[in-house]
Length: 111
Image (cartoon, rainbow, N blue to C red; front, top):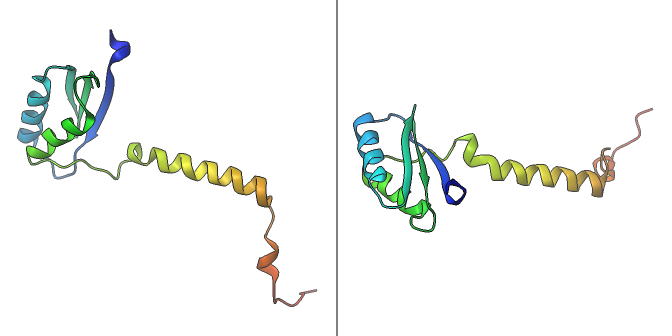
């Protein structure tokens, strides 16, 4: 049955009010469609059924408790890093690895 669950970790911005963090985790844990919830250091980890609950709903519950999701974590930058890697491969394929011709325009030969 765990093949149908999604797992999300929501890192919380510092400073963290651990009373509010615990309250949000308990509120999420009581929802129908949540399989498991836990607090790991400064984040809430949730296993849930996306057919019954959306990620946005979980974020709303966390933010309604006065906590804010930390969007600067490396986990949230994964998609951007993937884009940059694809761009790097594409540029090497199209332009090669040397310096572009335009970099030498209007320069006198230094010999």
